Length: 124
Image 1 (tube, one colour):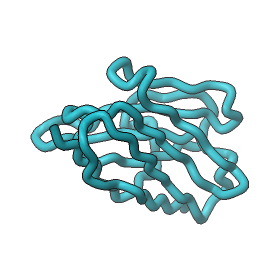
Image 2 (tube, one colour; image 1 turned 90 degrees about the horizontal axis):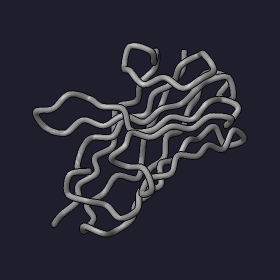
Image 3 (cartoon, helix red, strand yellow; image 1 turned 120 degrees about the horizontal axis):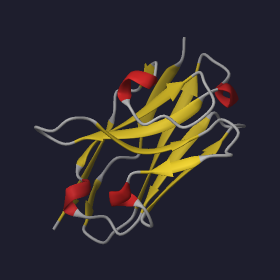
Image 4 (cartoon, helix red, strand yellow; image 1 turned 180 degrees about the vertical axis):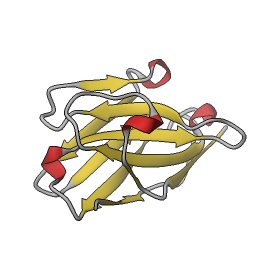
């Protein structure tokens, strides 16, 4: 059983930067493809970014391309999301997710493990 704990969420001004983290335990981290999703109030949870277990593949949703960077440190069992040029529409609860398959996945149902989320609020 994999446990995921997100951290680093905060209130930031538009145009600012923030890095959120997700620490994994209870499994072999390097065996998992990791993803970030977000959910704004009243909206569906949506895919943000994912990174394959071998770091051979990375994907982003169009709205964050060029602004967000996903990375992982398998020695620290941690995946990161560096967010630059933040916009008010980036405000959401950000979730970390893991799947025990290689290759990028874009839908919630493809991820077996989820964290509790970390809140990112971007003020205008």
